[in-house]
Length: 159
Image (tube, rainbow, N blue to C red; front, side, top):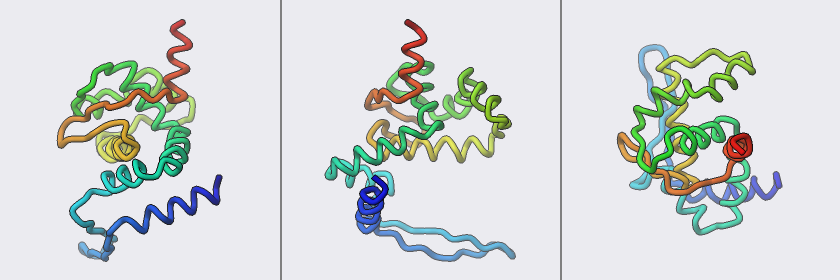
């Protein structure tokens, strides 16, 4: 699987039109990037839609991530609607009982607001690239039900 993943990832990266540059602010510098008209999410989603093997492989990789699983569980079991404001997710996701339990179990602190506004969009980007959600400026729209590990556990416990 690792070799296949590497080959598919290399092919996908070749389709991205990204230019990197170094930007300086004061004494600290950081690397930025510019991309053509398409967003990275759209480019990856289009690539995956035309390459089912890559889509299946990438979904398998991302659906093994605890954070992705918990966000899916949150969307499907707590929000339970198609259109959700990003502000609701930022305010509520890390307050979900199973997320709080996960953080406690792993000795992690509840993230600050600054951390939340960086982590949750990253998770949204993953879900959008996989075609599970669409993002607008202030809302997300759930497009598909994906029976991820945490979602299946929640359904099994209810029975």
